[in-house]
Image 1 (cartoon, rainbow over the protein chains, first blue to last red):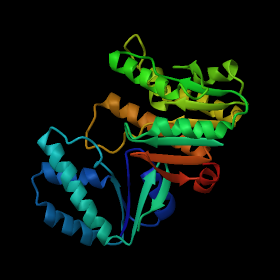
Image 2 (tube, each protein chain N blue to C red):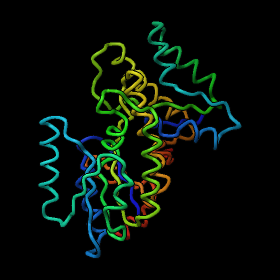
Image 3 (tube, chains in turn orange, yellow):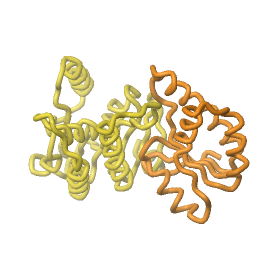
Image 4 (cartoon, rainbow over the protein chains, first blue to last red):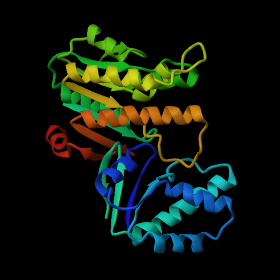
Length: 108
Length: 184
C-alpha cells in the first residue's frame, strides 16, 4: 500500500496518477471515513476490511487534522477517526508521501 | 531569486519573508513592499499597523496594489527586490467584488498577473496562507476560494526557485533548499 496525503487542492491525485497510474487509486479516503460515520458503521471492522482489500492500492487522503476543533459532533468525530485511521495506514504502508503545493516529500 | 512562502496563520510567515527580502536585496536597487490588503474593519487596521511597525527599520518602499497586480511593473523599478504579501488578500480582492457579487474566474486573472511579474522581476518573495488542512465542509463559495488560492499557490510553487513552509517560525524547504541555504 502507498499512502499520499496533504491539504486540500495540493495536487495529491495528480501526483498519484502521474507516478502510480498502473495501480488502483483510492481517492478521498477522508470522505470514505465520513460515509462510515454517517452510516453508523463499525470503524474498526471497516478499516480492517479496507486495509485487506487495498493492500496493493494507492490511498489518497486530505489532511483535515490542522484546524480548530469542530463544533459539530459529527465533524469532530470525523476529524478524530481520520487521524487515528491515518496513523494505522502509515504503519501498514510501504511508502508514505506528503504533497505540499504540488511538491512531494517522502516521509516513509 | 524567486521565493514562495506559505504556512499557517500567525506562524511567522511575514516576519520571515521580510528577513528573506532584505537578504535578497543586498542594498542594491530599491526594496519594495507590495501591500495587498484593503482594510475592512478595525482588526485589519491593527494588523496592518503591526506589520508597518515591524517593517519600519528596513527601507521598504510601500506600494499599495490590492488588485491588478501586474500594475506594479509600471510603478516600480523591476531591477529592485520585492516582497508581495499576500496572495490570500490579492485573490480575495479580485474574487469578492465591492458590489457584493463574486468572480469565479478571479484566479485566472491573478495567475496571469503573477506570471507577468515573475517574467520581469528577478528578486521577489511571495507570501500566501496555508488554509487547506481543517476538518470543515465549507459552503461552495468558500470552497471555491480555497480551490482558487491553491491553484495560484501551486502555480507560484512551480515557477519559483525556492518554496518554503513556515511552521511556528521554523523553516521547511520543499524546493531549492540548497539555494536558500546559500543565500540565508
